[in-house]
Image (cartoon, rainbow, N blue to C red; front, side, top):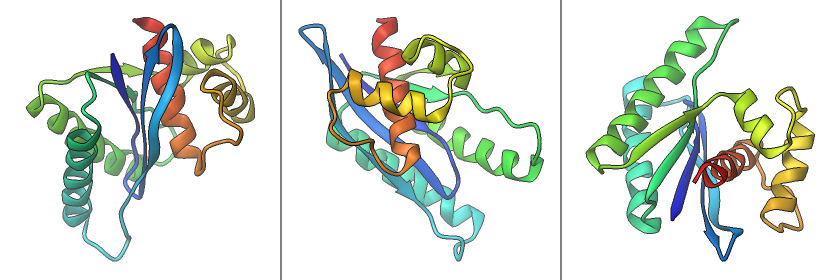
Length: 155
């Protein structure tokens, strides 16, 4: 089973593809989908749509783990990210991919064993779980791998 992890954002969306082979989690790829602030919101959503389709075409995931949107401070940013999440959900729906959403605390609990873990703890465990020598950069890619680990642990 191959999992696509998505850490949604408007400027930067972290993505990762991972699978479990013989009970061992293995990363296939990870990176970011980037959009530029010079573009309109509509153009940025189109870029996310196109780039996510390319990732799916290239790596052929079976299921998707996405961070559940949560915002409490900046509602303007939250609305923009919600639009990006909607585009990602739409792409997955058109592709027949189930999307399982996880809250940040659920991911931390799954990966670290503590729902209030610090980002550095999550990154450390991502490296251990996927046998990586270095923490994936940027943080969005590491978060996407953590989402993959969470989903692979659920299956």
